[in-house]
Length: 114
Length: 118
Image 1: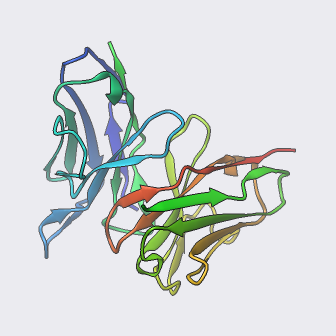
Image 2 (image 1 turned 180 degrees about the horizontal axis):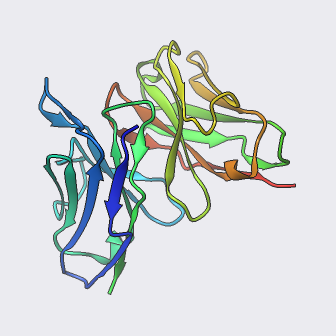
């Protein structure tokens, strides 16, 4: 099974400042035939289902503000919020969809306002 | 618009059974795989099961294999999760989510709460 390790567990950032969440896969999730990393980021606010923010490690979904960006380097991935807004308070999860079953999620990172 | 609506949750005693439903609308249901993902209170997301668009393939997490069964009825645009031999640790909100082949979950339902307690 591919293990997804997220860090930190939580972080508090001032409004307007940058927040970076890390995710590491236990093995490559890069499909060589299309050169895509099978990595997604989700945002979950209290009492709501997860919402897909980014797919293929760095492709923002339609309607997602451009302050959200994803990056990849080998088996290390990052979600960056360039300028934190109050509405970004949530738990963020990474997920690999390269090798299923099982499809695996990171443990989540809680983002709060400092 | 795309909608996934879960139902069937509730309070059940350990060892008993429950069947969840996921009703879909607003898209070509028979073209998508449907997953169940659960979230225990205050915890993270745990993938539970998937059924392919045509129902021909099904996979389960080790934690539910042999106890849960996923099925679908494309004529009713509904996926089911039959949960038998329920345990305390199955207590969670159960979400269904759709997947186009080897893609992330672009739509999720709002979830249904299952509480296993004596």
